[in-house]
Length: 110
Length: 109
Image 1: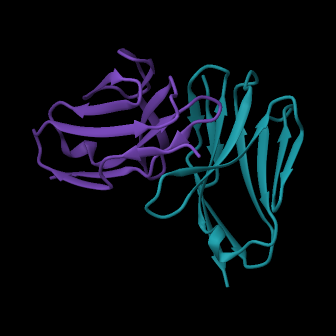
Image 2: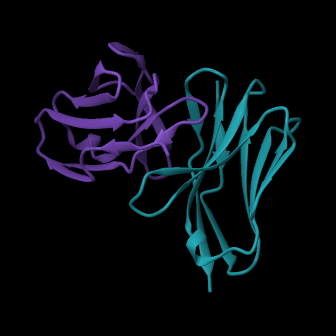
């Protein structure tokens, strides 16, 4: 079955890079997503990567996909206080459903 | 921009009450979803709908039902609310990707 795993917590100093990791089990994933959830809010789509890509960059965000190891990462360059949030990775198998990880709470240290 | 609107941000109900959570989307999406979010468990799919009057069970449908009478509206119903249904409920619409509402934090006393 599908399973998506993330670390629960990450602390990073302001100005450093944050790297949030995710592993998944189903090799037939078609899309992999990163969502951001700020306190008291819903999920905001940050970025996504198609399974035939290795990397995608969008301003301060870089997504890396290692299909062999079933490992997905989100790097946030020059981390700011506004980046404090919970980050969810999710995989899609091409049907309607997404499987989400538990979320990683990113805390920024001034 | 896609807009997914959930009718309430916060809701407090009593055990045994019938509870309705409403979700409306403005992008003519066929797919709509209801999730619940609990600390340490991530998001779990309760039900989804791929068309008007069509519904499919997700991973945790017990104690819930849904209604999709119009394409833009998807309702989640707690037939007889229980304290273990206290949670954050998130509605989403679309497919590849899904777009989320702001959530309803539901407390059952």
